[in-house]
Image (cartoon, rainbow over all chains, first blue to last red; front, side):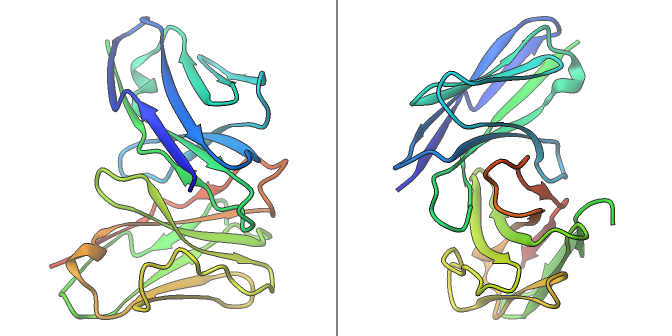
Length: 111
Length: 116
């Protein structure tokens, strides 16, 4: 059974204080790893897809990296508007492209 | 439309009643998914539609849950004889096709279902 574990559950940062969120996964075969951002009362918003170990993707202050067992979402010099819940999900090739999601990391950036 | 539209945004129902949740995907998207997000839990896959193929219903938690997609577009998720444990946010997502090589799903804002 595919498993995705995200840590920490919650993270408070001062504005400008860089940090990383972790996503550990166990799958039979990874077809893709996805990062989403979710704001309160909204659906998840797609950020990145990573396909193979060693791959990196960047968008503004966010950079996602992937190894064979985990992915990191690095946040550089965060701003209050980066406050959200960040979700990690894996596509293990189960056939219907359904994703297995972690429970998320709730990030709060304090001005 | 510009995004995935879900209605209603909020629904409060009495235990034992039936409810219907609607999803209008992005025009041209052939793949449509329903997920459920319960408090403190990750998103849980419910059902997948792809074009005219038979849907993947493997995530539906019980036979009280059903879904259909008419004309390859609008989808309706029906929950019969609702129970308190059905309370959750029901999210619909669509994509152009298989996820490999794509930018992931586009989610709607969800329907918050509360069973009292």
